Amino acid sequence: MKTIDQVNFSGKKALIRVDFNVPLDADFNITDDNRMTAALPTIQKILKEGGAVILMSHLGRPKDGPTDKYSLKHVVKHLSDLLGQQVEFANDCIGQEAIDKAKNLHPGEVLLLENLRFYKEEEKGDTAFAEKLAQLGDVYVNDAFGTAHRAHASTAIIAQFFPNAKYFGYLMAGELANAEKVLNGAAKPFTAIMGGAKVSDKIELIERLLEKVDNLIIGGGMAYTFAKAQGGTIGKSLLEADKQDLALNLLEKAKAKGVNLLLPTDTIIADDFNNDAKTGVAPTDNIPDDWQGLDIGPETRAAFAKVIEESKTVLWNGPMGVFEMESFDKGTKAVADAVVKATQNGAFTLIGGGDSAAAVAKFGLTNDVSYVSTGGGALLEYMEGKELPGVKAINE
Image 1 (cartoon, helix red, strand yellow):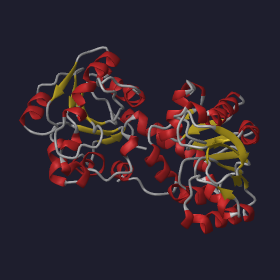
Image 2 (image 1 turned 180 degrees about the vertical axis):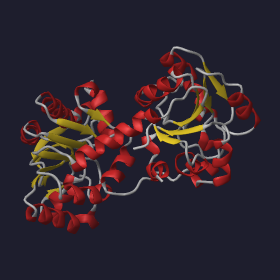
Image 3 (image 1 turned 90 degrees about the horizontal axis):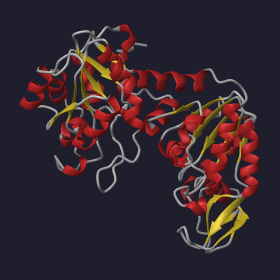
């Protein structure tokens, strides 16, 4: 793997693609800086060796060019605080100001460029745009795992302008090493926990995992499609009606491969989709007509926890219910606690980004598991066996 450990950055300008797509509140305060702190080791290594750092990222999904709400200027102060030094800012990611500021950057200094997605060319993977970005640095470093599955200008196309000077940062290298550890070096028993709303989002991953896991736990909204497919009544719960045959097919495959597939047996039901709704407990396959399942029930929590705690490798992707609402976060919390216990027992536990990462953060357990991925979609695609454009570009 081509990592920054293979380079001495003394006197070099490193152009680093980071993922600073962080959530901001109405006053532009960062509400979760995990993605920024994850990039610090790469930045600090380069600065320590006497290199200069030029950072490029996107923020949000701006539709029509520059928009104040999506400006990366809002993260400059926090980044300066994290690094313990002033970070320069360019009001554009290409153009004369960016060129001048990059040119005048001294060893040990940091420059952050404005939001890449203010240009449509970024998401289109435009070569001319990538070339303009490439002119700003001597070495290209990709440390943005969260966007590695996108063939964008700054993640996949730009690398061709650095044929002998393109590397993975520490975050990217760590993400890939940990994904590989779970995919191809998992200690047994290996348990995968799949949650979230739709079976369709996780099909390919579930099919690939059935080749590798001992236990597959399915919770969250997608579980109701399985319940309905098996002849249950699920009230107003989430349902992908056209995926019922697929659900049955997955159950058959699991059985044929000797995989222990666990589905929720009881459910926390509500008469409305809000935190103050009237709630109750019902069998997952017997939910009253006007009610909906919003979390796994106590019996299921105990069954899932037992299997997780006895595992030696755990992969978790997707919550067990609507954990953003306090009334329906018990199932996700129970799974999180069980994953922590498994970690304490010596298991390797990988949290698959997205909502699962948000859940462990909500419960204050981020540091109590083995690894929390910064890329939900990228990790899913990598685990499905797809080639990530951002990874391929460095490896070529």
